[in-house]
Image 1 (cartoon, rainbow, N blue to C red):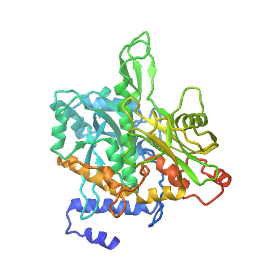
Image 2 (image 1 turned 30 degrees about the vertical axis):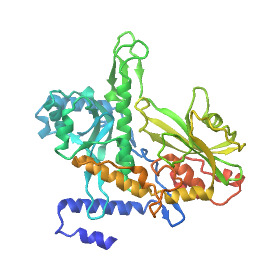
Image 3 (image 1 turned 90 degrees about the vertical axis):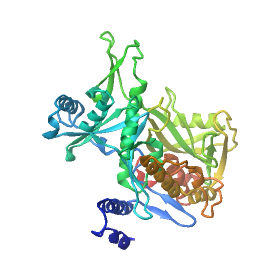
Image 4 (image 1 turned 45 degrees about the horizontal axis):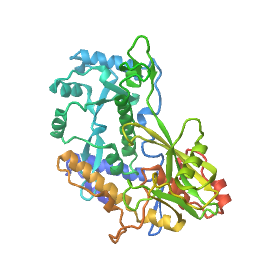
Length: 450
């Protein structure tokens, strides 16, 4: 493979192909840091972090006086907006803006060379371009329209997001540059989980969507009903009433998600819902109620949905999930392995379509047969088509087939979901008795044990 890649790097190739080659080489090298074992009977995927985690813009919070911190950066940004001449002699930091429309970030796609899968990228634009685009739509850009995402001081760049849902003309204008607004969930499926660069881009997109959706649903004060205004570069909001001044913070909805295991460690309880892709089974999950611990939520939700009584609950890892409904801008999925004290299932049909015990071998086959890479390629091509304006209907469910083309009898969510890792870490765990497996299950948030 390396020799074929090197031949593509020949000076006779165009610059775009060289860029594509370098990106492919980066992806290939990044795979060396990710444990990925695939055979005819097993498939285990280990990631450094879950999808939507590992945001590089949020790794460190700048000090308040740092020019890359939210408030100083916003003041510099406002100065640049007022002075039309500063673009030619701007001093650090510089600014990049990611437009969103109806929860969808602007994205581009670089077509793969030969059989290579297209790569999507976030559609960052400069502050000056953002100002010009909005001006062409008759809108004057101001600092309060932008939401601070974070910074990369090493690159002298501060990153922002902006909601342009009301400016319909921008869709056509961006389309002329092969840019399109794409659902974050579509980008998630289109992301190669072995590509660390793309995974970081996905984390940024998820964080930005969560913030903008929170701004959209918190326009008025829940205490007095007056208008809320952004403060601290959009990281907070405050009531505009002088008599109230109530502050609110970005919303996070915690959810427990759990793989229920029998005491012999031979079977796992999986469920499916009517909204799932046909034949997909997953873990149980539910929102945490006020006044209960995480462990109590695991036991309550399991009992309510399946009638199974749970004993010991063991923490596995957590994942931000910013692709739920807009009314819940960002859920925090807190994952557990939990051991059943009873086995008889009584499904709550209002919550679930079905729930069944599945033995380890059947679940292993489900992990093997589901062609996640094929689904990723299909989604990546879809993004490319959207950016080129030639989108065609795609049926992602058809990609979860066995190699013969026949439908897989069952499959589980892909590697972008924490459910996948709760399930696969149980499937590929050493053959131990129930108690021994219980004692040796991962107890920290480190993904190295998945």
